[in-house]
Length: 319
Image (tube, rainbow, N blue to C red; front, side, top):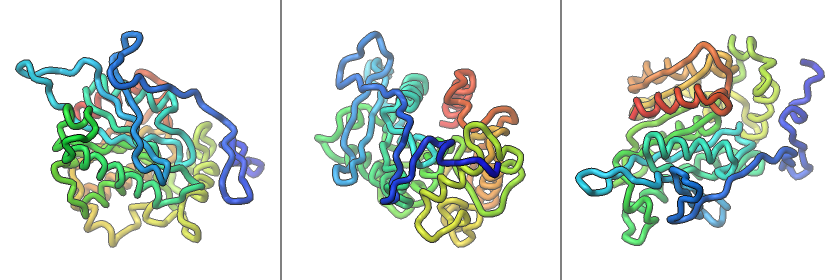
């Protein structure tokens, strides 16, 4: 792959100031608004500012028809959701992210708080983890404020709050869950952490990375570049943000994590790292469920409806 240009593969240009120009613009979807369910949609959605200074926001989804219990509206679990995109791409408004959150809200059913976190390289790690903590504290604020966000205040079951992340989002929810251990989130309680094909790396190549080095979607040079543009300057891929397995001092804290669900696919270059991570969780005494399919590639559930349904079933069974 000596002639392979990862910038070209990712459709990005490097700018002199360290930012990038993203040459591909994916289709986006608008929110439905507060009360309307146009065109018979099952789910309503709206955008709310998270931190104006950081230009972060959340897109909230809830079922249009709320389930009831003894003629009272049943409170729904809350998922704080972090999209994928290898740190560099996507937003809560992108169609694939929006539709996945709508599907989760409808089928679980649940309230989804999808976080529009800052992207790299304009904002390098740990900015994304800080945005995740902002989202956790924001959900807590809605639980305590009589004038808080109505959908959460009226319909959320705050002791059943889950962190859900895909790809880079799967990395974010691990670090968010660890940081949450030092926070008083009451009455919010993190009941579980879902990591769907979490993005991990390291300096030493794994068998799955070498085997899938020329993967069409996430070839190894592109993954390396994503980390190069995301990690703090002067660090390498064995930094704990990228490679949690080598963070021996951090294992004591990892042991305090609650229930975890890790999902992966055999054709993902990162699958060995995901399985090593699961093994570390088990050795630390964490209650972890691992769902690995030998067939499939990184992000297959974003384009294969059957796999998407399977992933949703894993999540439903987990909660």
